[in-house]
Length: 261
Image (cartoon, rainbow, N blue to C red; front, side):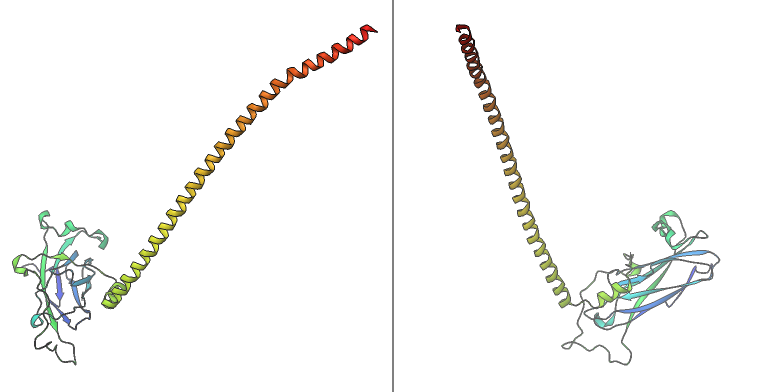
């Protein structure tokens, strides 16, 4: 029987469970083969966990650690038991393949590739040097039921999201009061933007009215200038013959005076 592509240690994901606190654990993958091996991590509860990294390539004789972080929970599960499962898929890839070269088709059985799968289960443990979770009002507070199939019942496995340390810290410190305050701040900003938008629309409307008024005044002035020009031309045409007649009359009188002398 051929050895497994990857040696996985441990095969149980143990999380120290405390209400409203995140918990993490690490898993080591060892490539004991002489080939490049790519891996991919899936889980039945992608909203509850994040994995860093959730894919990668391990060189021959090398190791790779991935960290699984369970998001802060507000209620304790029944009997401190979770049915969440993880699946580690591995396959041989060409020599020189990098993490950027990993594509979904590498882990598709429909392509005829040899895909090895290893199942990991989740175990919750109480914090060290502290009493176990006490019942609330006589009974442990139950979390809502999740429709999560077991791995041996053809589970729905999804890729786990990868979050940065900054995002993890932000989620851990996110309380209802913070959310309410941020929501109020966003509403106030939205209200201020709406007021500024209305003011901008009023200003634009006023500018359009002033522009239309200026255009009308310009057209009125042009019309008045045209009328004034016509009147001046008419006066010139009427006055010129009269002056000419007066001039001829004066010339005629002067000639007559000289002739009678």
